[in-house]
Amino acid sequence: MTDQKDTPAFIEVRSLSKHFGDFVAVDSVNLQINKGELFSILGGSGCGKTTLLRMLAGFEVPTSGQIFLDGVDVTNQPPYERPVNMMFQSYAIFPHMSVEKNIAYGLQKDRLPKSEIDERVQDMLRLVQMESFASRKPGQLSGGQRQRVALARALVKNPKVLLLDEPLAALDKKLREHTQFELMNIQDKLGITFIVVTHDQEEAMILSTRIAVMENGRFEQIGRPKEVYEFPKNRFVADFIGTINMFEGVLQGVRNGKVIVASDECGSSLNVICDDPPTPGSDVCVAVRPEKIYISQNRPDNSEDTCLPGIIEDLGYFGNISLYRIRLETGKIVQVSAQNRQRTIDRTLEWDDEIFISWRPRSAVLLTK
Amino acid sequence: MKANSRFIISMLSFGYAFLYIPLISVVIYSFNDSRLATVWGGFSTRWYGELLRNEQVTSALFLSLKVGISAATLATLFGTMAGMALARFGRFRSRNLFTGLVMSPMVMPEVITGLALLLLFVSLQQLTGWPGQRGFGTITIAHTTFSMAYVAIIVQSRLAAMDESLEEAAMDLGGRPFRVMIDITLPLIAPAMLAGWLLAFTLSLDDLVLASFVSGPGGSTLPMLIFSKVKLGVTPDINALATVIMLFVSVGVVVAWRIGLRMQRTND
Image 1 (tube, one colour):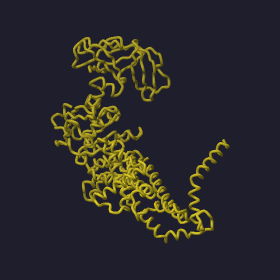
Image 2 (cartoon, rainbow over the protein chains, first blue to last red):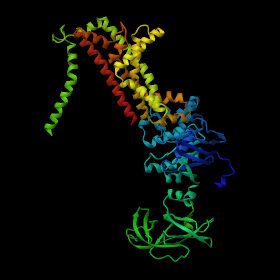
Image 3 (tube, rainbow over the protein chains, first blue to last red):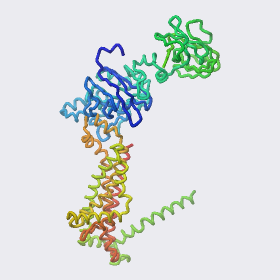
Image 4 (cartoon, rainbow over the protein chains, first blue to last red):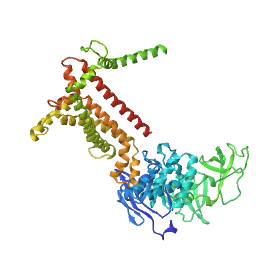
């Protein structure tokens, strides 16, 4: 982020690596996270995101590199000395202690006076709305309640950073949506820096101030959710976040600020607006999100737009939107989504209808990597 | 279908009869009033009274209990340590060798273990003067060596089933490794340790071979006493003694099994 460069980074990771034998789990990553951010590390399984989180918590010793927290080098600090707490994916609630005892554990290790422990535990119980469950054993709690206890236990020591490992993965869909916003509210209220590891891109998009997309132990892109979605840096990020149609082609030239790409995949040349175009002749990719493509029965007359004829191969009705799979003359399948604005039973578009798809020049992204 | 189930039930009864009729007859004959062990002479509990008055029997029983409790306690201590090392220290070098060494007493023939320990004790005595007299101490050591393997396995499997992030969470919240063991690990494996203790106690109470090898004059455990008495003919008081032992062992096994069940339930 360029606009935050003047403030020093609260968390700074410098060329951090972790090798397990020959396997490189985290490959020399750099990262700066500001105070109060809700930062997500997003990636598929085995991309190294959990290893990175465990290094931040102190459970894994880095092979090389450094971690600074609030100006202090914590690389070699054991977990029990770091001002960092973690919410585990399994929640890891001590089964032989009541909810209250679980939350109090961290404060007891700090040898705080009992009155202060009681007060802070009560505050936390109130924050996660679990006051009436204080004396329950974990075995008597539901998944959502366990999640709250785990959150309270990790927050009660008022850590500088809270690490969350797949915080919502164990909850069902409705509860997850509700909890997402609650998590954001709590973060907002306490001002603690959150680092969330998740494989769920929707979760990362909703929660985060910034997202780091990780693959093979490296960051593919770091940016705000909108940047990552609308301006993906490369094919991997474009494909990983949401759905996208990609047309491979060769860059022909630049005309009136627009890049012209000849693509065999769609049988014509495509116009894309690009501020910093690569040299003509290079292999590029034009990527368009399904919701940015219009579908129409007649050829639209705006000559600026890219327009391609096609046939509806498949369509799916989702209630709020409809998804179409359009087959172009070249055989390439393009995904298009459209809002169902009209309240109607009859379908205006049917299987095998001959239609046109089109998009604005600004809607497409030019990818070089 | 019906004929089939009748067949199954009769096979089952036959199997159980084969296993339990000898044991039940021992229990029944322990209440036999007759001096002859195999002839029924009316109901009586006099052999139990006689047992209590027989100093040889009570001292053997006392020795067996003493050895059982000490050996089980030591085996639980060492077995828990071994189990923790196997389950939590990762893939350290020579881990497989260590596993083999811990587990080998389970598969080693008792005669060989007994002989080896006897030779060890004899040469130790020649070299250092200890053990001056073989008995309680030597039997306890022998029983500890082979029953700690069982404790190690029980503790290891409990730890393997336990979520490792529980210990990590405690450490994350500021617990130093030793505190985490006291606060989290030990309470959670306590049932496994108790089950292991009971198993070790039962094994020690049962053992005849090892004890015979490593014991000296005057140090007779209960199984040793019974075995030597039977050589002179079965007397009714042995039936009574056997019934008492059966009671001890079955209580131990049932309690260990119940603990195991509860352990599984808290795991789920």
